[in-house]
Image (cartoon, rainbow, N blue to C red):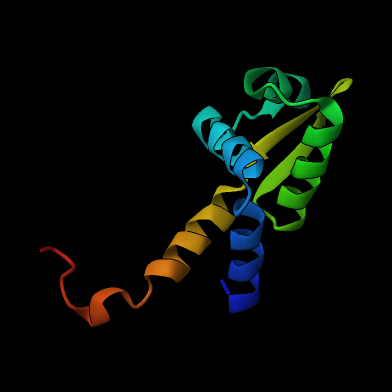
Amino acid sequence: MKTNGAVAALSALAQEARLKIFRLLVQTGPDGMAASKIAERLGLPPSTLSFHLKELNQAALIEARQDGRFIIYSANFATMNGLVAYLTENCCGGKSCAT
């Protein structure tokens, strides 16, 4: 992951509702969840949820796919893992991080 991708992902996650949405989708796994179920679980109005899903999608943190008349959202685990790798790439200057 490049710096601009990390900044976009971190910016998208730096908002409470989006962080909750992303964490829920990570917990759900690759099968994902319909937008209506996300809204129900997190108590978000549909228009608010739609705005936050758009922001997460633009940062490549989530993916959407059509399933009949539903849109299923899932975490983009490649982006998530890339962000974690970016953040820990030079951890502790190559030395053990154990205290």
